Length: 89
Image 1 (spheres, rainbow, N blue to C red):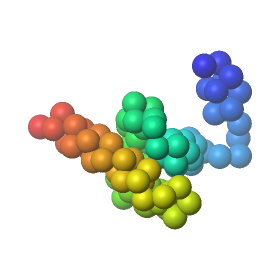
Image 2: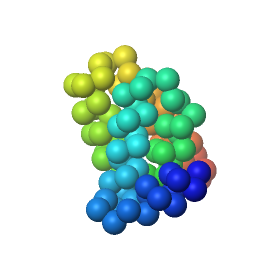
Image 3: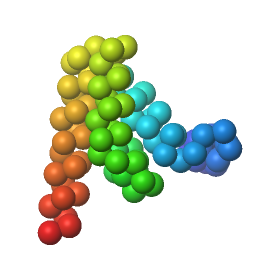
Image 4: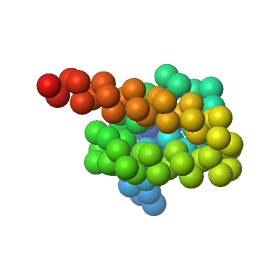
């Protein structure tokens, strides 16, 4: 954890929003990281990314990683969006 968050995430070239979108795209492309996608989609929304940005990055993944991986990620994104909307009520 120290390496990821202390050494990698603290580098100055990308802001935290860009890092979260990169994490979402990588995890979505793998296609088998649903629990980690939940964490990083929530993280992206917490640092100011919009739902539209999350959706667009997942759609971009479809081009390179295939539609099955992107569909799996989109299902997770919808669950996160729905859970967050429900918790605001």
